[in-house]
Image (cartoon, rainbow, N blue to C red; front, side, top):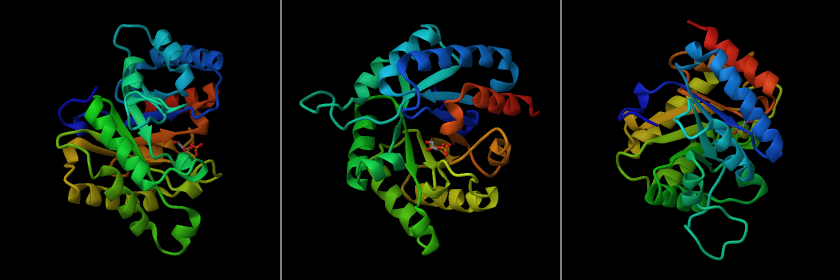
Length: 264
Ligand code: 13P
């Protein structure tokens, strides 16, 4: 999917459908997304469009996309740190790859908060995914409201990044998604200015961890809609967006895609 230089690729538009769609709804949404992509293909070919359906829907979505190379890539929403074994309910990165994925979200705050995923678990997931597959990890980091209010944004990001990225092999592409927890599913996202400050810090940390600019992209996620998307895609703010709620409602997501396809 990537060229040698991640930055020679286009801004990322990553749709995280979370657990919002049942399998038949997901294949329906993918069908209408394919139609939307065709309709605005000229404008949308400037972006890398990735959809992360829930695991049970990946196969059906892949069938909708067809065997030929599609302008829409697929990603998992999580995976485990072993290929096979007695790990009830888990999915391996190899399975995701076989199902047609080229990306995988790891360390999403909903998994950290609701399912108790720790930095150590996320580190093992990222390391195994990189060792066992050619999937590109989309590593989520971000602070809670409490951490933000107590001035701990940098220390939280630093801790999460150092842990998650410490076993990424050299010359491996990584997408880091900055998703402040307080801005997810909220009425208002972070301001582009605040976002740019956090993203600059993430770049600085990644550089220090030996992930050069050409191997990393840093995107923003949290309440991105068709109204706000352009402010986050402005040059210098981010390398793309990770869209949750708005991506699983077809009308809203198509309107977001129409908005970005139309900018010159
Ligand atoms: P919302 O776009 O619904 O705020 O979700 C963001 C997110 O969690 C994407 O991974």
